Length: 199
Image 1 (cartoon, rainbow, N blue to C red):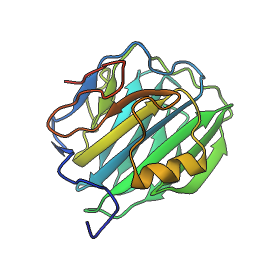
Image 2: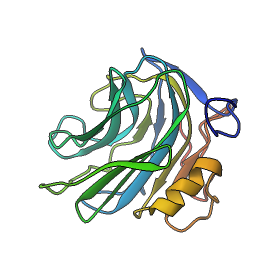
Image 3: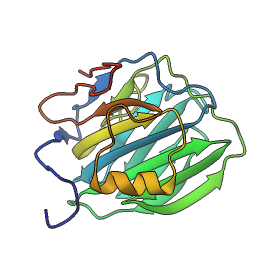
């Protein structure tokens, strides 16, 4: 397609920014202060809402999400938020957040755009589901308006080369450390062996 390298734009879910989302119950999400990476293709139309989120959105440091607000993307840990980056609306982008040893990095379209060392450990509450296109289930707000595809979650920090390769090619479903991969075409099924399908 002309505005980005996403291989099949039909394999995505569209969200209205009002009440649409996917909820994925999983018992293997990264918790506490453990290492992780999350990524997604997204096509923002409203410029607002969470692309993905999990944890508790009402307790300090227990949420892990990427939120758009007026076209600007932020990492939100609930009280330890960081990383603002403006993206163009109505075109595809690829975002990856990595976290390990208190270092938080944001990549957009395969390029590192910001990083920081958080002064406070994360305490992400993994007992809550992974949510695509809204805030956590404890909040039920900040709905995303646009399309989302190819969401992945990992139990390790992806390096720059691995992230850049995902821009042109989805990961193997048995890649090391891959905990979930949701293509988001006609359904929200998990392509990995864990089978954490969404609703």
